[in-house]
Image 1 (cartoon, rainbow over the protein chains, first blue to last red):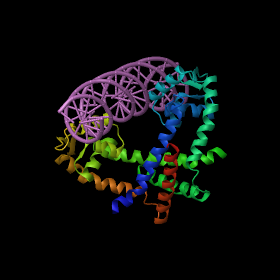
Image 2: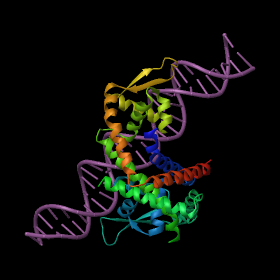
Image 3: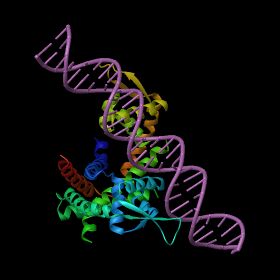
Image 4: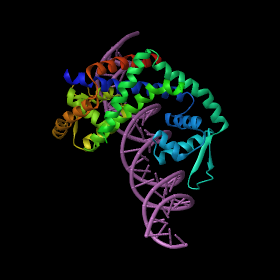
Length: 145
Length: 145
DNA sequence: TGACAATATCTCGAATTCATAATATTATTA
DNA sequence: TAATAATATTATGAATTCGAGATATTGTCA
Protein backbone atom coordinates (compact mmCIF):
# COMPACT_ATOMS: atom_id res chain seq x y z
CA UNK A 1 0.00 0.00 0.00
CA UNK A 2 2.92 2.25 0.75
CA UNK A 3 4.50 1.73 -2.63
CA UNK A 4 1.29 2.09 -4.56
CA UNK A 5 0.65 5.37 -2.80
CA UNK A 6 4.07 6.81 -3.56
CA UNK A 7 3.68 5.73 -7.16
CA UNK A 8 0.38 7.43 -7.65
CA UNK A 9 1.59 10.81 -8.96
CA UNK A 10 3.96 9.00 -11.29
CA UNK A 11 1.31 6.63 -12.63
CA UNK A 12 -1.26 9.38 -13.04
CA UNK A 13 1.23 11.52 -14.88
CA UNK A 14 2.00 8.70 -17.32
CA UNK A 15 -1.65 7.79 -17.78
CA UNK A 16 -2.81 11.35 -18.30
CA UNK A 17 -0.09 12.05 -20.82
CA UNK A 18 -0.87 8.84 -22.68
CA UNK A 19 -4.56 9.74 -22.84
CA UNK A 20 -3.74 13.21 -24.16
CA UNK A 21 -1.34 11.87 -26.77
CA UNK A 22 -3.87 9.34 -28.00
CA UNK A 23 -6.48 12.05 -28.25
CA UNK A 24 -4.17 14.24 -30.32
CA UNK A 25 -3.12 11.31 -32.46
CA UNK A 26 -6.75 10.48 -33.20
CA UNK A 27 -7.34 14.07 -34.21
CA UNK A 28 -4.44 14.41 -36.64
CA UNK A 29 -5.03 10.91 -38.03
CA UNK A 30 -8.32 12.21 -39.41
CA UNK A 31 -6.20 14.28 -41.81
CA UNK A 32 -3.84 11.39 -42.56
CA UNK A 33 -1.01 12.88 -40.54
CA UNK A 34 1.21 11.27 -37.96
CA UNK A 35 1.95 13.20 -34.77
CA UNK A 36 5.52 13.84 -35.93
CA UNK A 37 4.30 15.14 -39.29
CA UNK A 38 1.86 17.46 -37.52
CA UNK A 39 4.63 18.72 -35.27
CA UNK A 40 6.79 19.63 -38.25
CA UNK A 41 3.94 21.49 -39.93
CA UNK A 42 3.12 23.22 -36.65
CA UNK A 43 6.66 24.54 -36.23
CA UNK A 44 6.73 25.83 -39.81
CA UNK A 45 3.31 27.40 -39.38
CA UNK A 46 4.36 29.36 -36.32
CA UNK A 47 7.97 30.14 -37.23
CA UNK A 48 7.91 30.28 -41.03
CA UNK A 49 10.74 28.88 -43.15
CA UNK A 50 13.33 26.94 -41.17
CA UNK A 51 16.14 24.54 -41.95
CA UNK A 52 15.55 20.84 -41.46
CA UNK A 53 18.01 20.94 -38.61
CA UNK A 54 16.17 23.76 -36.84
CA UNK A 55 12.86 21.93 -37.00
CA UNK A 56 14.44 18.68 -35.85
CA UNK A 57 15.94 20.44 -32.84
CA UNK A 58 12.61 22.04 -31.97
CA UNK A 59 10.73 18.77 -31.83
CA UNK A 60 13.62 16.53 -30.75
CA UNK A 61 13.67 14.24 -33.76
CA UNK A 62 16.93 12.72 -35.09
CA UNK A 63 18.29 13.82 -38.45
CA UNK A 64 17.61 10.48 -40.13
CA UNK A 65 14.00 10.64 -39.01
CA UNK A 66 13.70 14.22 -40.21
CA UNK A 67 14.74 13.18 -43.71
CA UNK A 68 12.03 10.52 -43.61
CA UNK A 69 9.23 12.75 -42.33
CA UNK A 70 10.14 15.61 -44.68
CA UNK A 71 10.03 13.17 -47.60
CA UNK A 72 6.55 12.10 -46.53
CA UNK A 73 5.28 15.65 -46.22
CA UNK A 74 6.72 16.63 -49.60
CA UNK A 75 5.02 13.57 -51.13
CA UNK A 76 1.76 14.65 -49.57
CA UNK A 77 2.23 18.12 -51.02
CA UNK A 78 2.24 19.98 -47.70
CA UNK A 79 5.78 21.36 -47.78
CA UNK A 80 8.64 22.28 -50.06
CA UNK A 81 12.40 21.83 -49.92
CA UNK A 82 14.39 24.85 -51.08
CA UNK A 83 18.05 25.69 -51.16
CA UNK A 84 19.30 27.80 -48.31
CA UNK A 85 21.05 30.85 -49.83
CA UNK A 86 23.50 31.43 -47.01
CA UNK A 87 24.53 27.83 -46.35
CA UNK A 88 24.71 25.22 -49.07
CA UNK A 89 24.85 22.38 -46.54
CA UNK A 90 21.41 23.25 -45.21
CA UNK A 91 17.97 22.93 -46.77
CA UNK A 92 15.07 25.27 -46.13
CA UNK A 93 11.64 23.77 -45.69
CA UNK A 94 8.41 25.73 -45.70
CA UNK A 95 4.69 25.11 -46.01
CA UNK A 96 3.25 24.84 -49.52
CA UNK A 97 -0.06 26.54 -50.27
CA UNK A 98 -1.85 23.30 -49.50
CA UNK A 99 0.12 22.90 -46.30
CA UNK A 100 -0.83 26.39 -45.19
CA UNK A 101 -4.49 25.81 -46.01
CA UNK A 102 -4.41 22.57 -44.04
CA UNK A 103 -2.87 24.22 -41.00
CA UNK A 104 -5.16 27.25 -41.21
CA UNK A 105 -7.95 24.77 -40.50
CA UNK A 106 -6.07 22.40 -38.21
CA UNK A 107 -4.29 24.76 -35.82
CA UNK A 108 -7.37 26.42 -34.32
CA UNK A 109 -9.05 23.02 -34.06
CA UNK A 110 -5.99 21.68 -32.30
CA UNK A 111 -5.94 24.61 -29.92
CA UNK A 112 -9.57 24.06 -29.00
CA UNK A 113 -8.83 20.41 -28.35
CA UNK A 114 -5.92 21.21 -26.04
CA UNK A 115 -7.92 23.86 -24.23
CA UNK A 116 -10.82 21.48 -23.73
CA UNK A 117 -8.54 19.00 -22.00
CA UNK A 118 -7.93 21.42 -19.16
CA UNK A 119 -11.38 22.97 -19.21
CA UNK A 120 -12.48 21.22 -16.03
CA UNK A 121 -9.82 23.07 -14.04
CA UNK A 122 -10.31 26.51 -12.55
CA UNK A 123 -7.64 29.18 -12.71
CA UNK A 124 -6.28 28.23 -9.32
CA UNK A 125 -5.91 24.60 -10.28
CA UNK A 126 -4.17 25.43 -13.55
CA UNK A 127 -1.64 27.58 -11.72
CA UNK A 128 -1.09 24.88 -9.15
CA UNK A 129 -0.54 22.30 -11.90
CA UNK A 130 1.97 24.54 -13.66
CA UNK A 131 3.75 25.24 -10.43
CA UNK A 132 4.04 21.62 -9.35
CA UNK A 133 5.03 20.36 -12.79
CA UNK A 134 7.77 22.99 -13.03
CA UNK A 135 9.21 21.87 -9.73
CA UNK A 136 9.03 18.22 -10.72
CA UNK A 137 10.59 18.79 -14.12
CA UNK A 138 13.46 20.72 -12.60
CA UNK A 139 14.06 17.97 -10.09
CA UNK A 140 14.08 15.25 -12.76
CA UNK A 141 16.40 17.24 -15.01
CA UNK A 142 18.85 17.93 -12.25
CA UNK A 143 18.75 14.22 -11.47
CA UNK A 144 19.95 13.27 -14.95
CA UNK A 145 22.40 16.21 -14.93
CA UNK B 1 0.74 35.46 -25.71
CA UNK B 2 -2.75 34.20 -25.14
CA UNK B 3 -2.19 30.94 -26.92
CA UNK B 4 1.18 30.27 -25.38
CA UNK B 5 -0.32 30.82 -21.97
CA UNK B 6 -3.19 28.42 -22.50
CA UNK B 7 -0.75 25.84 -23.81
CA UNK B 8 1.49 25.99 -20.80
CA UNK B 9 -0.05 23.18 -18.73
CA UNK B 10 -0.09 21.00 -21.82
CA UNK B 11 3.52 21.69 -22.74
CA UNK B 12 4.74 21.27 -19.18
CA UNK B 13 2.90 17.98 -18.89
CA UNK B 14 4.54 16.67 -22.05
CA UNK B 15 7.99 17.94 -21.10
CA UNK B 16 7.85 16.62 -17.57
CA UNK B 17 6.68 13.21 -18.72
CA UNK B 18 9.38 13.08 -21.36
CA UNK B 19 12.05 13.95 -18.82
CA UNK B 20 10.80 11.24 -16.48
CA UNK B 21 10.67 8.63 -19.22
CA UNK B 22 14.18 9.43 -20.34
CA UNK B 23 15.40 9.16 -16.78
CA UNK B 24 13.80 5.73 -16.39
CA UNK B 25 15.06 4.62 -19.77
CA UNK B 26 18.60 5.60 -18.85
CA UNK B 27 18.27 3.60 -15.65
CA UNK B 28 17.01 0.35 -17.20
CA UNK B 29 19.39 0.68 -20.16
CA UNK B 30 22.23 0.15 -17.69
CA UNK B 31 20.93 -3.42 -17.38
CA UNK B 32 20.41 -3.81 -21.13
CA UNK B 33 16.64 -3.60 -20.86
CA UNK B 34 14.16 -1.57 -22.86
CA UNK B 35 11.38 0.19 -20.99
CA UNK B 36 8.83 -2.29 -22.36
CA UNK B 37 10.96 -5.22 -21.24
CA UNK B 38 11.28 -3.72 -17.79
CA UNK B 39 7.52 -3.21 -17.60
CA UNK B 40 6.89 -6.88 -18.38
CA UNK B 41 9.36 -8.00 -15.73
CA UNK B 42 7.85 -5.55 -13.25
CA UNK B 43 4.33 -6.92 -13.73
CA UNK B 44 5.55 -10.50 -13.29
CA UNK B 45 7.56 -9.52 -10.24
CA UNK B 46 4.55 -7.99 -8.51
CA UNK B 47 1.81 -10.32 -9.71
CA UNK B 48 3.67 -13.61 -10.23
CA UNK B 49 2.88 -15.92 -13.14
CA UNK B 50 0.51 -14.43 -15.71
CA UNK B 51 -0.56 -15.19 -19.24
CA UNK B 52 0.97 -13.17 -22.07
CA UNK B 53 -2.43 -11.63 -22.65
CA UNK B 54 -2.78 -10.53 -19.02
CA UNK B 55 0.60 -8.81 -19.04
CA UNK B 56 -0.11 -7.15 -22.37
CA UNK B 57 -3.36 -5.75 -21.02
CA UNK B 58 -1.65 -4.43 -17.90
CA UNK B 59 0.92 -2.40 -19.77
CA UNK B 60 -1.17 -1.61 -22.87
CA UNK B 61 1.05 -3.35 -25.41
CA UNK B 62 -0.43 -5.05 -28.49
CA UNK B 63 -0.28 -8.83 -28.74
CA UNK B 64 2.18 -8.80 -31.63
CA UNK B 65 4.54 -6.65 -29.63
CA UNK B 66 4.15 -8.96 -26.64
CA UNK B 67 5.37 -11.91 -28.70
CA UNK B 68 8.41 -9.88 -29.66
CA UNK B 69 9.27 -8.65 -26.18
CA UNK B 70 8.68 -12.06 -24.58
CA UNK B 71 11.02 -13.61 -27.18
CA UNK B 72 13.68 -11.08 -26.24
CA UNK B 73 13.32 -11.70 -22.52
CA UNK B 74 13.45 -15.48 -22.97
CA UNK B 75 16.61 -15.06 -25.08
CA UNK B 76 18.13 -12.97 -22.31
CA UNK B 77 17.23 -15.67 -19.80
CA UNK B 78 15.00 -13.52 -17.61
CA UNK B 79 11.72 -15.34 -18.11
CA UNK B 80 10.19 -18.66 -19.07
CA UNK B 81 7.26 -19.69 -21.20
CA UNK B 82 5.20 -22.51 -19.72
CA UNK B 83 2.00 -24.22 -20.74
CA UNK B 84 -1.10 -23.04 -18.97
CA UNK B 85 -2.77 -26.09 -17.41
CA UNK B 86 -6.32 -24.78 -17.56
CA UNK B 87 -6.27 -23.24 -21.04
CA UNK B 88 -4.16 -24.62 -23.86
CA UNK B 89 -4.61 -21.48 -25.94
CA UNK B 90 -2.79 -19.42 -23.35
CA UNK B 91 0.86 -19.40 -22.30
CA UNK B 92 2.10 -18.70 -18.81
CA UNK B 93 5.16 -16.52 -18.43
CA UNK B 94 7.09 -16.11 -15.22
CA UNK B 95 10.44 -14.84 -14.03
CA UNK B 96 13.37 -17.22 -14.22
CA UNK B 97 15.82 -17.36 -11.32
CA UNK B 98 18.01 -14.85 -13.10
CA UNK B 99 15.01 -12.66 -13.82
CA UNK B 100 14.02 -12.69 -10.17
CA UNK B 101 17.55 -11.87 -9.06
CA UNK B 102 17.67 -8.99 -11.52
CA UNK B 103 14.39 -7.56 -10.30
CA UNK B 104 15.28 -8.04 -6.65
CA UNK B 105 18.03 -5.54 -7.31
CA UNK B 106 16.25 -3.35 -9.83
CA UNK B 107 12.82 -2.81 -8.25
CA UNK B 108 13.97 -1.04 -5.07
CA UNK B 109 16.37 1.05 -7.12
CA UNK B 110 13.54 1.96 -9.46
CA UNK B 111 11.28 2.87 -6.57
CA UNK B 112 13.90 5.17 -5.11
CA UNK B 113 14.30 6.83 -8.49
CA UNK B 114 10.56 7.45 -8.85
CA UNK B 115 10.30 8.73 -5.31
CA UNK B 116 13.19 11.10 -5.83
CA UNK B 117 11.43 12.66 -8.80
CA UNK B 118 8.66 13.97 -6.57
CA UNK B 119 10.85 14.61 -3.55
CA UNK B 120 10.76 18.37 -4.01
CA UNK B 121 6.98 18.39 -3.43
CA UNK B 122 5.38 18.55 -0.01
CA UNK B 123 2.37 16.45 0.91
CA UNK B 124 -0.02 19.20 -0.02
CA UNK B 125 1.48 19.61 -3.46
CA UNK B 126 1.44 15.88 -4.14
CA UNK B 127 -2.24 15.70 -3.28
CA UNK B 128 -2.95 18.71 -5.44
CA UNK B 129 -1.09 17.13 -8.35
CA UNK B 130 -3.01 13.87 -7.98
CA UNK B 131 -6.29 15.71 -7.74
CA UNK B 132 -5.73 17.87 -10.81
CA UNK B 133 -4.35 15.06 -12.93
CA UNK B 134 -7.33 12.86 -12.07
CA UNK B 135 -9.71 15.57 -13.21
CA UNK B 136 -7.75 16.17 -16.40
CA UNK B 137 -7.48 12.48 -17.22
CA UNK B 138 -11.21 12.02 -16.77
CA UNK B 139 -11.92 14.97 -19.01
CA UNK B 140 -9.63 13.70 -21.75
CA UNK B 141 -11.07 10.20 -21.58
CA UNK B 142 -14.63 11.42 -21.76
CA UNK B 143 -13.59 13.50 -24.75
CA UNK B 144 -12.45 10.46 -26.71
CA UNK B 145 -15.46 8.48 -25.48
C1' DT C 1 46.19 29.55 -47.02
C1' DG C 2 45.88 24.72 -45.44
C1' DA C 3 44.54 21.44 -42.13
C1' DC C 4 41.16 20.08 -39.25
C1' DA C 5 36.91 20.39 -36.60
C1' DA C 6 32.06 21.33 -36.81
C1' DT C 7 27.68 21.30 -39.14
C1' DA C 8 23.68 19.73 -42.25
C1' DT C 9 21.73 16.32 -44.73
C1' DC C 10 21.19 11.78 -46.48
C1' DT C 11 21.75 6.58 -46.68
C1' DC C 12 21.43 2.43 -44.61
C1' DG C 13 20.52 -1.13 -41.24
C1' DA C 14 18.66 -2.46 -36.77
C1' DA C 15 15.04 -2.17 -33.40
C1' DT C 16 10.46 -1.60 -32.18
C1' DT C 17 5.62 -1.12 -32.74
C1' DC C 18 1.18 -1.94 -34.78
C1' DA C 19 -2.39 -4.14 -37.73
C1' DT C 20 -3.91 -8.03 -40.06
C1' DA C 21 -4.31 -12.70 -40.90
C1' DA C 22 -3.50 -17.56 -39.52
C1' DT C 23 -3.81 -21.25 -36.15
C1' DA C 24 -5.35 -23.49 -32.15
C1' DT C 25 -8.32 -23.84 -28.38
C1' DT C 26 -12.37 -22.88 -25.59
C1' DA C 27 -17.14 -21.25 -24.84
C1' DT C 28 -21.79 -20.78 -26.36
C1' DT C 29 -25.98 -22.01 -28.24
C1' DA C 30 -29.37 -23.93 -31.15
C1' DT D 1 -23.54 -32.72 -30.49
C1' DA D 2 -22.46 -29.58 -34.40
C1' DA D 3 -21.83 -25.03 -35.75
C1' DT D 4 -20.38 -20.67 -34.56
C1' DA D 5 -18.37 -17.02 -31.84
C1' DA D 6 -14.78 -15.65 -28.80
C1' DT D 7 -10.11 -15.88 -27.06
C1' DA D 8 -4.81 -16.46 -26.96
C1' DT D 9 -0.89 -16.58 -29.34
C1' DT D 10 2.09 -16.34 -33.31
C1' DA D 11 3.59 -14.96 -38.09
C1' DT D 12 4.18 -11.48 -41.23
C1' DG D 13 4.73 -7.06 -43.34
C1' DA D 14 4.40 -2.01 -43.09
C1' DA D 15 5.59 2.14 -40.69
C1' DT D 16 8.45 4.71 -37.88
C1' DT D 17 12.41 5.78 -35.19
C1' DC D 18 17.26 5.99 -34.05
C1' DG D 19 22.29 5.69 -34.69
C1' DA D 20 26.40 5.22 -37.38
C1' DG D 21 28.71 6.29 -41.33
C1' DA D 22 29.17 8.96 -45.85
C1' DT D 23 29.25 13.30 -48.26
C1' DA D 24 29.35 18.11 -48.85
C1' DT D 25 29.99 22.53 -46.94
C1' DT D 26 31.42 25.93 -43.60
C1' DG D 27 34.14 27.75 -39.70
C1' DT D 28 38.47 28.06 -37.07
C1' DC D 29 43.06 28.81 -36.29
C1' DA D 30 47.96 28.20 -36.62
